[in-house]
Image (cartoon, rainbow, N blue to C red; front, top):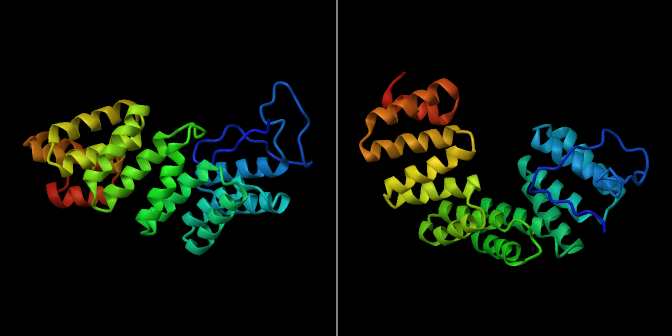
Length: 255
């Protein structure tokens, strides 16, 4: 069976170069059955994750030259076009990916996220539902969490919460869902719940400017000005150029 590529998750070690249309088979090589197009797709995804967008663009375009019918390559190229701000090109590639493979559930998830980011909330929710409803998609907590995030950012936190809780039921250690629940709890003025979700997040993931600033605001709401200032000072020390650090300095002054 040909291995499936999943653009929304981290890809394993990649081949440095491709000389033939298909690599020689090897019992110890998990990529031996991949075509050249598949390998260039994986390389492109890896470079995109590393921020080397121009190199990623070259590899993904080459993957499509090698196999114009590759749904995975078009899905990855759509994600890259979105990062590059090429909205129309991204939308076209997402559509092509789904027309080539209507069971590419990674594309349904990625396309849903794209549609949400471009303001098409209802269309996004339809795409997410296809991804999280099928037993064929191995990580349903990802589209569930994306659906919740989409609704929360659209000002519909009450509708977002059930999606986020379902995501955490399927994977209680998924950091994006934990962070989104922290936001939902803060907006509902459930400050102890916000603290608890942030603590669960911090137990499995590194703090970011976003989590530190969210924590500082929440601690202020709980009346712990000392802890809020400590988090603000961490922002200034660890992420001095972030927008959150600028906001912290405005609120608390320089450390």
